[in-house]
Image (tube, rainbow, N blue to C red; front, side):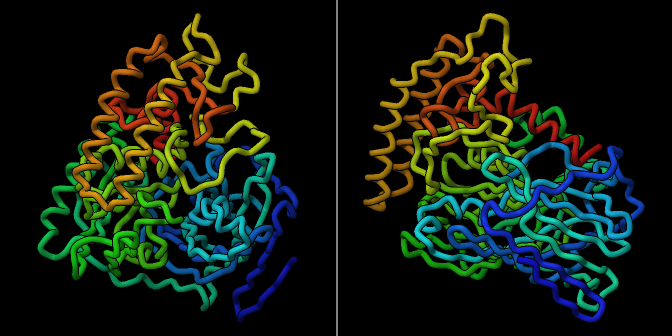
Length: 485
């Protein structure tokens, strides 16, 4: 269905597509990387509503606003990483050439895989697309992967930057921006912005210490360690009236500036914000490419959405692991490699295409494994490991965990359980015959059968202190290149 709206100087064309009903669009009219000439040195933010019910997905414009100076690359304007379930393209209307693109994921995209969505419940999520401010009218196209993993258009809108319905004024800064470390101009660095939710005014010194602690840990992991000079890190002080964030299952209700809440999709450990507009308005005070939110809570939890935001609870015993793991999702679209924990998504599809995520494979053709260049000669593919023993131990831990949560036990008991599990897992996985080698180990992305991960252990698989595997490291480095070259 095609709908056109004309508003004195701004033409908006909305394309609403039913699931599986949209023509595939061409990728680009030129093989060369476009220059920054079509843009001004500022950020355009297109806010939209993402609504759906089973079998139908609708995107609708909210507003177009200025979002501060442009922090992204001025040379890597086209995204060639093939990451994300969604992709947006900015097309120059005069030439019909793609002048900017980025892959992304969304909370809506995760929600539509939940039981609630499959039962016919409709929900709406607020989302944003950020790109350099165009000098002339552009067409913004959103594409989504279909059942065959091909990108197909689901929405399109024309934006004239000169229209009076496009707000060129900057929003008033909220909070105080401070620099953790800076290595150069935003245009040539990956700019990470850290926000805190649930910190009272008196706890802002704690926020500073938490930021410094988490950043230190992140840059102790490769490839962040070796590429630290490619990053700038900033933070914003934004106190809340009361300490802590919203925790519905325990009856600890809060309304905070960033709107972070546990129990996203009714998962007790999944914490995100659904208040995208507020978060973006606050973040606009500083240049950023990626956005991390520290949660001032001891309750285990966090979350990460590719090219959207990530969160981590700072006072759990596993805060550093959560921060780095969830940042892997947010930064490089890394898939979860574990498969024995309870998740909110429905899994178990009969047909498995080769996943687009860089660290998971369906292994349809072992001879052409997508990371085969990292496999040592003599390593069998698929790669054997003591899978049944691991699964039995994981079931035992999950049952204990569920009992603790049902009893609302102190967080210290949860930490003790997970610490014991980590000690066992580190020793068990470390003694596997192919430990430390790249292969194809069955069990990944919430599926015990049919999906494979690159190494027997990785921070995307377990809480063990093993860091990112070599496949994940390479995927992260590619994203660093996209924003710092």
